Image 1 (spheres, rainbow, N blue to C red):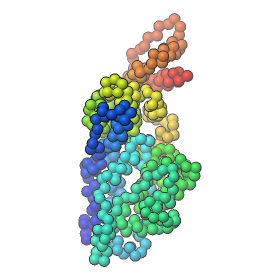
Image 2: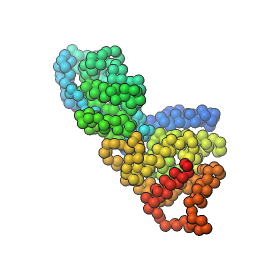
Image 3: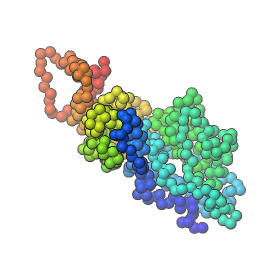
Image 4: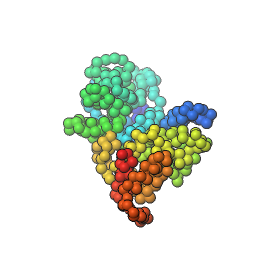
Length: 437
């Protein structure tokens, strides 16, 4: 059997084409209900459920998926050079490394890490179970896809490894058996998703390290995904742990405003629900990005709240309803995060740990987003539009605060000359601090 016809390798090679990855990764639900026929709450729930399922692969998504494919192809070429090589190791120890340094995927909560892992599952070929003929003596063998586990607060290294094996064993035996089982069945990777949920337990640090060290000992390429909060924890570990856990880290960033990928996501939502969404994917792209910092989960929640507001009027979501959603109490927690993210980008400094990646990873969109935010601050659109959504009582309070901070008996003229980004940021902070008092 030649290298080109090597089944361990050839099953993944077509995925080295980025356009094939993009095609297979795209996901849009088949059936779309008429949500206008549903009750107010049921319509919001259904809309949010559908928008959360939609996956429009961006250039960044495709690049990361392509890298993961390269990793598994390289692994298969290295450890499955021929059928004879596999057959030799069926009856001896697998030729896998004692420990593999882990790959990490990190990013802001809600930016789309889990969706990217699900897209990876989607692009992979169908498993071959018990139908692979290696030679006349070895038939009925399997070619399995990556083992994937989603972590919760009750997870442990033993439970996760048992889920891969399908049986209960001691942790040491599980590692030994899975190394053999994974090699013989062509498992190309192990993926542990939502790792930050393990930190909710009372024995978080111990369980976290036990899990990462255990999956590393399987000898297979291993990927974990986690929010910034967990990366902060790992960054405080000793050097040998940081070398194993953080030396191969990829950061998933929000797409920049006015980018082709961001506009394509908005346009997809518009095409799915043309009777609901009436904003402009091009003209309103930067404004909508401002209100959710480009975070997919925030965008979905923003549009869901905006739809709930619109049901009291026309049932159509324009940029005005999105602005009202941004100012709503339901979006309060995310609004605080969005404003901190904006501030961090402009000032290029950490304000809040879980919104700032502790590892010095380059953000290819950082300067684009910074310039967009500065421009938006210079135009002062955010505060003007937000003020229009306040109640009469809130507007009177703002006027009283403004008047109290002005010199008496003096007309204050608003200059139309552009202000610096630093001055606008200072004014915005004063405005927020004053209103909250």
